[in-house]
Amino acid sequence: TPIREALFRFHDEHYSANTMRLAVLGRQSLDELQELVAPLFCAVADKQRKVPAWGGEAYGAAQFGCHLRVVPVRDFRSLSVSWLFPPIKDLYRSKPHRYLSHLIGHESEGSLLSLLKSKGLVDSLTAGESVSASDFSLFEVSVALTED
Image (cartoon, rainbow, N blue to C red; front, side, top):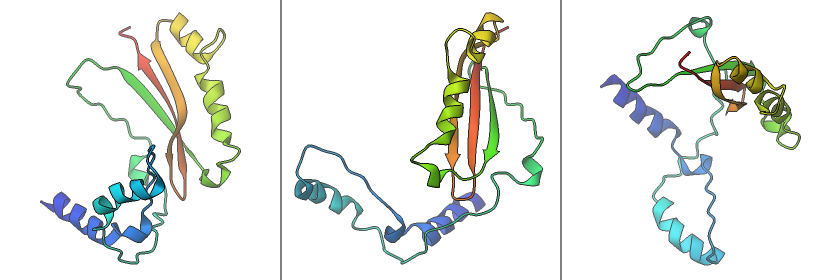
């Protein structure tokens, strides 16, 4: 199929040991961990690829202002809204998105969640960074809607 072929092309073009990182945590010594893990990953070819920079935008013009309706296979009510932000990878020490996440996602009296719950609209709310790419990030607010 065209999708399968595209996946194989992508794998062949981008799957290279020099662009990957692996973190391993265990109680064993470093030598023991390396002995456990190395056989599992040593077959990954090092094709000396450049680390990909995907560039561009999170969404193309065709996706803006698009409303999708999906027929779920189970009873599920949710609403997610995403905002396009500049890249935040270089801000990993200060984490400015966490301030927004805390303010919007707070659950105390007077919060957005408290208001929406008092009106019987939502059961829960989450807010935070959903995607962090080299050229952009997405901040998402998701709510689990009530049946009303």
